[in-house]
Every structure is written in C-alpha cells, then in structure tokens.
Length: 438
Image 1 (tube, rainbow, N blue to C red):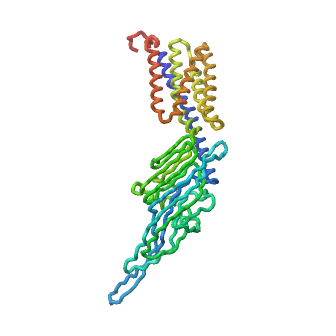
Image 2: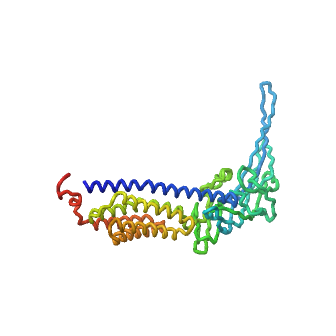
Image 3: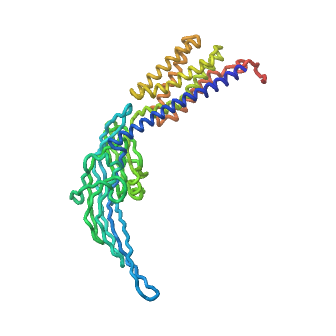
C-alpha cells in the first residue's frame, strides 16, 4: 500500500506542476505578442515587410459595337454598346538585383531587424497591340507601367524609371487597381502597333525583417545580397552563398513553374505575400522567446525525472520526503523557465540560461542537502539537474538534430534507471512477500 500511495502521489504532484508550467508558457506567448506588436509599430514608421512586383505594362481601351436589329415592319434600329477594359502585359524577361543593408531599431525591450534595399528592376517587353475585329471601333488610352510596392511609406526618395533610355515621371498608385505602388504614363499606341520597351526602375526601399520579390516575367533572374549572416529563404530555394560575412542569393524562375501572374492583381490589392513570391528574412539567430518556449516544453520531463529520483531514493535509502517538499522542488524547476525569459529580455540568451540554471540548481542543491540529510546527496541531485539543463541547452542550439538528441537522451535516462534498479526487490519495498497477491 505504501508503494502504491507513493506512486499515486508522484503522479498527482507531477500533474499539479503542469498548472504553473502552463501559466509560464502563457507568459512566454504573451511576451511574444508584445514583440510582434513592436515589429508592427516599427514597420508603421520605418516600413513594413516589403514586396516588389513588376514592372507591368497596362493598356486601357474602349470598344464601341453597333448592333443593327430589324423590327416587324422591316425598319432597322441601331444601338451602340460600349465596353471598357485593359490589357495587362508581363515582361518577357525580368531581372531584379539589389543589396539589403541591415540595421536594428529598438522599441521598448525589443530589438527589431530592419533594412534598406537599394537596387533596380530591369524588364523587357515585346508586345503587339491587338487589331480590332470587323464591326468594332476601338480607341486606346494612355498605357502605363506599374511597379507594385507593398508599403510605399518605405520608399526612400522618388524612384527613377527609364523607358528606352528616357526618364519618365513617376506617380503614386498602381494606376489600374487599388493596390500600393507607383506608375509612369506612356504615349498612346495604335491598333496593331508593336511595343518594344526596355524598362529600368531604380529605387530604395526601407522595410522590416522580410523582403520579397514576385517573379512576374516569362523568365526571371532575381538576386539579393546582404551583410546579414542569418538569412531565412522562403519560396523556391535559391542558389545561395551564406557565410559569416553575409549572403548572396539568386533565383532563376520560369513563368511555367509559378502562378505569380495570376496572383498579381489580387495580391497587390490586399497586401498579402503570394505563395509564389521569393523572399529572404533577416532572422535573429537567438530569438529568446522561441528558445524559451522550446525549453518550456521539456519542463514536465524535468519535473518527472526529479520526482522519480526522489521516489527511488526514498524507497531505497528509506529517507522520507514529504509531498510539500516534492512540490517545492517542482516549483523551483518550473520557475527556471520564467527566470530564463525575463533575463533574456535584457542580456544574451546564453548568459541568461547560465544564470537561471545556476540560481535554480543552487537553490535546489542547498534545499535537498537538508531534506535528504546529506550535503553529498543534495549535491548529487543538483549535479543530475545540471546535466539535464546542459543537455537541454544542447537541444536548443541544435534545432535540426533536436529529435534524435532528445530521443537519445530519454533512452539514456531510461537505461540508467533500469540498470540502477535491476536488483531492487519491489515486493519487499511494497511490504508484501514475493509471489503473493494483493
């Protein structure tokens, strides 16, 4: 009965520790939301996540169709139907190249990664205006070249746009939709006229954390480079060279492999990043909230292992440990994660981890030396926890290998417990002779 009671007590206390652990995880998530708000605040004043799309050629037109009908008396009646619309032409080739210059803005406790992109977009168009069908009168309006920019508030100065070597006046707005961007008007063409345009757009964009490009051309060559050493690429995988001095990335994309042209009108009107865009994000190499959240997922395991160690020590060495003492040690382990996230908001994550570990292990070691009536025993438990915290830090640093390292750690712990208790007579510890039934 005593063994069963102890087992039940350990299970109940472990479940009870879930409450403060979940509260701490809730605090971590709340701090993450504060950081997201800081990013939005910085983006509102400096420039948000940027998306560059275009240039795109748009030609408006109006058609008049005369319908002739005959009534019952044989008289003809004429009516005119008017239709307005626009043709959208995407470049045959599109080349975008530029440099991201990273920087940091602070908002309260939070550091937000920002950048300034300076570059150019070159596009080649070779299109022929459709010829009106018989019976259709068509008049063409002034076409324009539009360049989509997700947050025009991030434009540094006025973009320069040249068409066949001639500088064009740049105006705000896409010109043909409610999206964000700039455009430049061209001369009115004629039916059947062939337009061959060499377009060069030079601009500087300020943005926050992420820079994206939309491959709208039939053939696309998109490049970006920066001195930031921790990029995250999204969309199609680029040719990349990443080292401690920065990165270079290049995407060569054909239109047959994307739906970017179909996504363009809707995307620029709602401000979302399309699925076929290619982008790079300036990652914080050690995001304290992400790391602390990952660490807190192992909190229950730490508590359980500590309680199991108490349980085994109590049964084998016949040293009684009160449930309140179990609970206090569990709370000390749980508070480690709160210390970790609070310290990491002010100092480096590695140093925060070390200080929080030393504080909690030191407290637990001193407390257990009195509880277990031996300084050596208290030091032994503290050393065991120190190894666990060191292993956890290794898991946090090796995100790609976290699963195999975590499973290996659990196997090693289980093996140690099984080998340490392989000669234990559980029947004797439970107070019943071996071979009897309850």
